[in-house]
Length: 248
Ligand code: BTN
Image 1 (cartoon, rainbow, N blue to C red):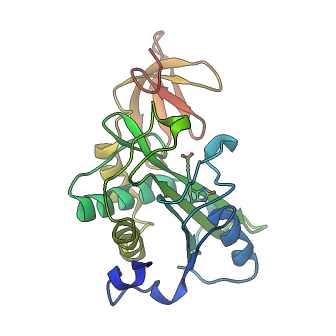
Image 2: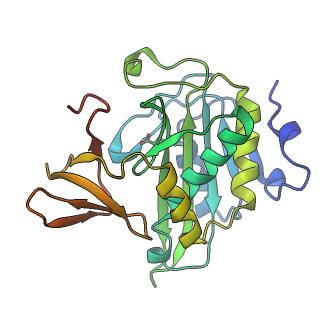
């Protein structure tokens, strides 16, 4: 039985816009279609399993039954450049929810990987739709978390929570629905504390650039100091952290 609604706080503003599907392709895709049809801020889609789960960089996110697969529709009134920190903000909220419901707080590998014991617990996929004037039409934020077991294909680098899936899902919905996701300064301050990438040797996969990740800007970009003393700022892209996922 799906208990998410029973676990949600009575005041949760997203309670009536929560949809739960037994199976779907991708909850992000579902919500993008619903957003185009006018679905309101705070619409949430949760699926028991996904057949075409997507991660960042065009990757597949394996989504067998048992894990958490959910997406949230946000309609903030702001310009796109004011929302570049959104993945970081949601990561902080998801860590808050996991800490509250499970007792231990994951770390975050920049920018969207949730980490426990140096292994990937899950990830966040943020997709923005913009209006012609550069303002945000909507943001869909997808969250995937392994629960109980990890797919054999990723067993060497993934981990899972031992927890009640519905309880954790409700905690995430409760937390995200009451956070001020636009409070960029405070959220980035908190993200920096959760982020394991800072002060580590890193490599930008797309360019091969290596160096020490010295700083996170207020919009969530990572500043890397190279061996020759020059710096590069990475706003999107994939960054490996030495010692993790096979990067030696
Ligand atoms: C990543 O690890 O790169 C991000 C993974 C995000 C997966 C979630 S599961 C719910 C939502 N629907 C998707 O297709 N992807 C996200």
